[in-house]
Every structure is written in structure tokens, then in C-alpha cells.
Image (cartoon, rainbow, N blue to C red; front, side):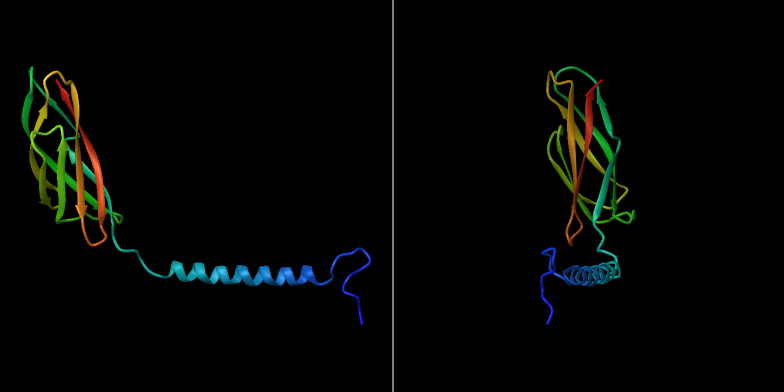
Length: 144
């Protein structure tokens, strides 16, 4: 019968067992990664929202209000346009505006800058259910 311990005090056979365990682990990991890669495309999610114009200039002194028509573009993670999105304009507006639009649709908003303010921002938030999520962008309002 052979001794488990060699003359140097190390156990024999452990390096070979360790190599076998590592090879099996790497193979299993490779199989799992392959399954995940083949699992299919994920559901589309909202990726980007953009607004035209991105900046608004209002003229005059005191409290300023001006009606502006914004065109809203909403895209998913595949680059396709999304329709039926709830868009909310808040911030430097006369009153908060919420409207359902298709990508490329327009929304009319009354931009408002308080007296003495030189700049402001309008937050544009786009939301859609069904796992699409939401995204925001900002429009800059300047006294010009």
C-alpha cells in the first residue's frame, strides 16, 4: 500500500483532480453561455427620446409665455420608432402637459419663464407600459 504523503509533505494526486474539476467547470460554463446566447432576442425597450427644437428662445421682459410646437421622436433598443407613448412636459411650462403621441408626433406647449429668470429647462418624459420603460430628455429655455 502506498502512502498518501510523499517525502516533501505534499499530497499526491491533488493537482490532477484539480485540473479535472477546472476542465469540467469551464465546459459547463461554456454550455451555459451558449444556451444564453441562443435564448433569443430580448423584448424591445425604450432606448431614446429626442425633441425638436432642443432649445427655445423667448423674447421680452417680465414673465414670458410663448406657445411652442415640439416634435417628439421615440426609439426602441433596435432603432425602431415607438407609437402610443405617453409624453409629459414639465418644468418651464405654463402648466404640465401630458399627451399620448406616436413617434414623430407634435405636442403644443406654452413655455413660461418667470420674471427675472434668464434660463430654464423643460423635462420631457416618455413612458410606455408592457416592459418598454421610460426615458427623459431636457429642452433648454433661454430669454433671448
